[in-house]
Amino acid sequence: MMSDLFFTLTELHVMFLKKNTKKQKKTAMQHLSWIQIILKVLLRRAQVRENLDKLSPALEDYKKVLEIDSTQCKALEAVSRLPKQIEIQQEKMKEECIAKLKDLGNLVLKPFGLSTENFKMVQDPNSGGYNIQFSQNK
Image (cartoon, rainbow, N blue to C red; front, side):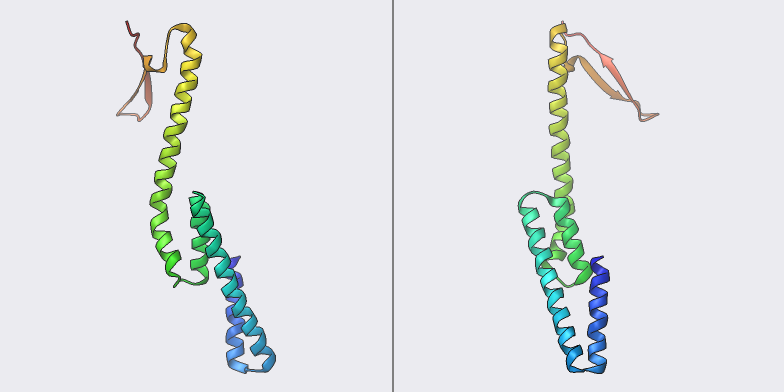
């Protein structure tokens, strides 16, 4: 949608350059100012999302900025930097979820004198599946 808007505005600007009437000049200048406003809004929203650790939506905004203007330095830098940070953030979230699931498992198993440490997951190298092994601590 953003790129369609940009191309429409660009076509109007090209039309202005060809015919150069006062009305077309005014229209083209208004459209160029709209493009600049849209870029500023997207960049600011991306920066705010990044500051709030909403990295995936921030990356999407930076990509939209680059669809409109591929020379934006901040967006170029962010698009190259954010995927690594998103991966790190997702790994951290995954570790937190696993820790919470272990805590829940321990809560359920405690009345039976067991814990999640009694169960080991071993990956089968041939099939890629997992086997759960039980070992009683004595």
